[in-house]
Length: 116
Image 1: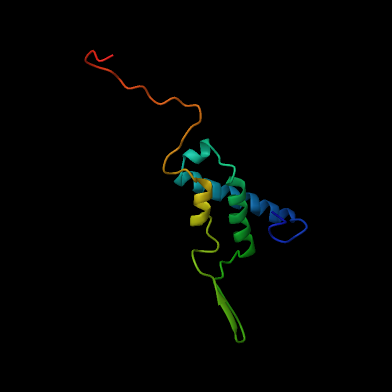
Image 2: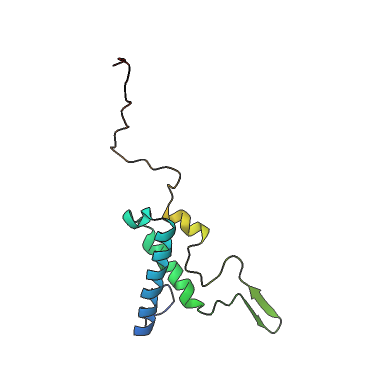
């Protein structure tokens, strides 16, 4: 987390805040997609780290900033939201449409009427 924030290390308070943010975010993710709690994708740690870093960089949720003639505005969703972005949801559940399990046998048809 420190590296994502461009620091050598986190203070104890920052580390505690990062753990709380990660836990809250994971609870929201698994609330929306319960099967992720059972089968955690490898990308989950990276997505959680990105969400926590976003929140720690911008804890007050500023969306725009002005300095003299210079100004900029963040586009998209709430910069302090604990929910993943659209791209992050895709990373968490790339096979959302269907899942292919290697080595799983297809279901056998049930035969009635003496056809087997």
